[in-house]
Image 1 (cartoon, helix red, strand yellow):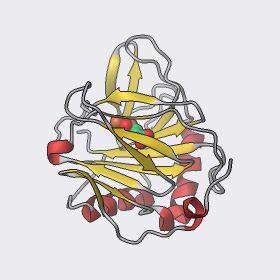
Image 2 (tube, helix red, strand yellow; image 1 turned 120 degrees about the vertical axis):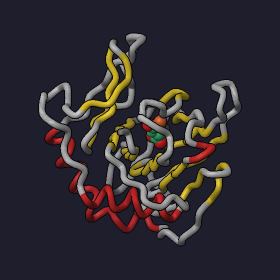
Image 3 (tube, helix red, strand yellow; image 1 turned 180 degrees about the vertical axis):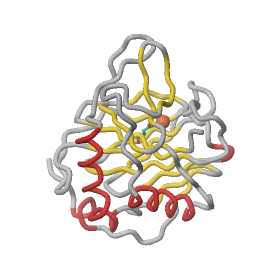
Image 4 (cartoon, protein in one colour; image 1 turned 45 degrees about the vertical axis):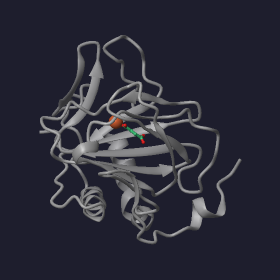
Length: 217
Ligand code: SIN
Ligand code: FE2
């Protein structure tokens, strides 16, 4: 399989698609930022390599993760939390590059969330077959700021659920450059990612990278 014409060439057109009262998808919003964004991702991964973290229940996650920003999200047998240092390298997480924080702020503003100041960016790497089960983002100190989630590379189906794990989720296809933003009454909705299908993207090859920006502290 290879990417469709739209997956490669479609440019952002300013659309803001609601997926909830305070939740939106901005199709292609990040596409024009790739020249600035992609080099920063290689540098982050060089300094704090992708790794498969372990959940408190003892399962190794299929998605590989790293972080940038003052705080990074981690999980191990002791639980989920944010740390200032990368537990694998002992060094602080790489600083959040301006190209990334600017993209996150601009996407938040386009979705109606002004003055978003992310201090944490979780970088997820999905290969075909990898999935992320339904969860809430609730390790942040408060839930006043939105979540800004940038999809890069091969497509995925994002699951956007309700406030109960058992609520039937919306299935939202996310392609390269799409940005999802959710906050306010939607901030704690369950969400996840279906197992990825094999595909290939001209800039990122056979993988999907997701950047999740949050204000953690
Ligand atoms: C996440 O919930 O941390 C990631 C969601 C995604 O990969 O789209
Ligand atoms: Fe999440």
